[in-house]
Image (cartoon, rainbow, N blue to C red; front, side, top):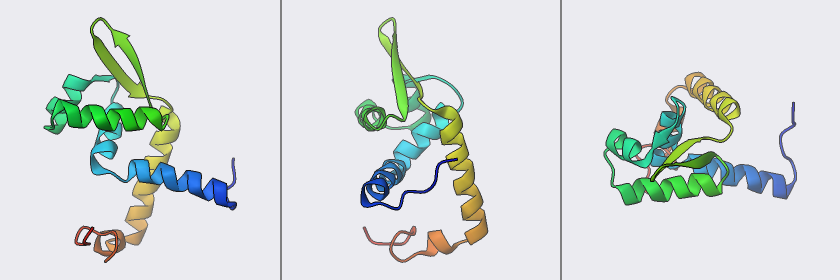
Length: 116
């Protein structure tokens, strides 16, 4: 098992990862992709968002190495690049949220009522 980063570069990389996961639409896309491959049209329909919005977030996830894409005819089909590790991370996050109760939601800086 890898240890947690303690150097500045490692912490910055971890921060970038969490920023990529910290956007609600991107997290919703990743959660949906945990069910299997999806086309952009499938994701836009499920999320109720514009194609351009979903495509922009998919581009970010692709650039971050969290998703992969392959052409199927005229469509692009997206899947998780590292499904087992992403699943483990999200399960761990759920466990942490369960352990901390409402603390994250009520946080004045990052919670649901925080001004951004």
